[in-house]
Picture 1 (cartoon, helix red, strand yellow):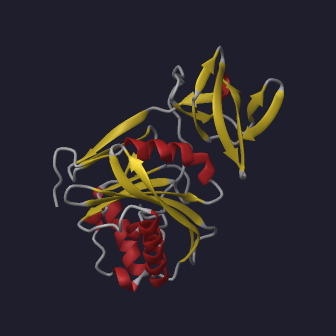
Picture 2: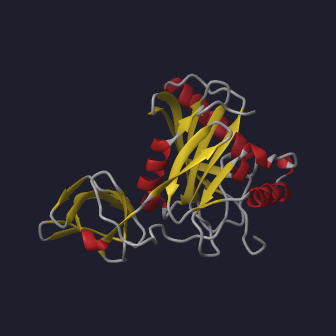
Length: 275
């Protein structure tokens, strides 16, 4: 881990971290089925409607296979703010297998093959870097972030999913509660010297539970571009589960369907939680 830079205190506050990065979907091709998570295989993957090219996707863009028609897969894709629904040939896609991680802290989630669950040493190093950067986090406890899952590869910011567990409560899960949540986020990041933009929050369902979903872009020193984060806070029986998905803002669209699948897969209070 010594060559890997670490990011701002959002690593503990909101679950962001700097790790090596690589594109998902490196396993041998598998048959694609309806509902599968898939990834574009090249920088010239075309989304078509009959003979018209609607979008050309970068390699590593994650998508959901909505329908299959012969050798074509219906997807909805985004690039640079433009959204289109059309067909991609199966040769331009690769199916992503989702693996299950079950934590003794009372939750489980699924994550894409090729991504790595950080070891205890790696999580402790992230917390150590946070402490060095920010006085407010001298007492940061890496055990509060029992799971960090990241996309390994290059020496750059890695797309990642983290889960924090601890006691606490969330505002009322409603429109007013979401506004209160946003105000708390702004105050927390301002104390760290980070600036939030494009902040929004709403009440959502995760499985059979109500949760608060919040999204924002965060800018801070020593980070070359804004990082976009999507945080979902789920009240459990005795604890809060805070799941945060992070990527550079310029790449977030490529990974949003993957992050959505991770969030949808979350099960909390599985087998009882340990404080």
